[in-house]
Amino acid sequence: MTTRNNNNINIDPEKVTAERLNGYAALFGCIALVGAYTTTGQIIPGFV
Image (cartoon, rainbow, N blue to C red; front, side, top):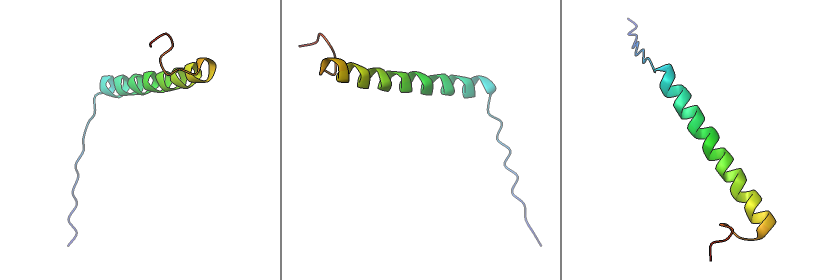
């Protein structure tokens, strides 16, 4: 006797899109941080 566990979880497409955009924004921020550090030598340019 085989028992199947069908847990179909439906995720809203809006949530998937929001999380993807959040990931893109975080990645862009990390790249901007590295670029600022390599060009100025400071993590936050202008902040003493």
